[in-house]
Length: 115
Length: 146
Image (tube, rainbow over all chains, first blue to last red; front, side, top):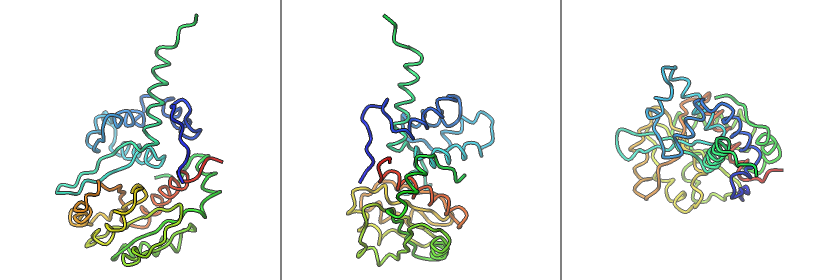
């Protein structure tokens, strides 16, 4: 039994919509930057470190934990050979939220013209 | 990791926590002790498992399998069980910091399974909140919004 998910991103379930707006409310936060970076491909912890811009590493760990707790990000481990690599990727729920964020931001930047 | 969850998920978990079972698989120490501690302290639907019980395991509609991976453990006994399941996102590995992951996942990759979903948990303090969140997410995903 799975939870019903609408196809159209504007019709996100309430909890995902609230998450998207929480992140959209502060578009320059680590959370938003991480989500948008993961939209293109899975990333390692070290790939995400440039977003810290001099801040403590703990901030990145906490942001990833927060996104993971919210069910937006999961960690996959590639242990085929040494060194073992951990990569973070968007969950299906996270992809919905990012789609919503991108469309919302696009709409905000280019609002439809009134006739 | 803070214990905060959003209001909708909290409502769903309150309504449905009895409908979702978390199976905790542990093979060796200290993971077996960790599993027993988690089952004793956490008032959720947690069921301890040994690898030999996997072949006869009857799965409910909503479930999560948490595999506690400690030094010396491998995934050989787990692979036949997981290979027959389409929803592999229900299987989450909690990795002890000293576990040899290449050796542990050798059988996993030999069976053609994809990179596993993992979290770090070396002690009860790190395991309990992470397992709780995974279980909350699973309950929320498996049950419609009220």
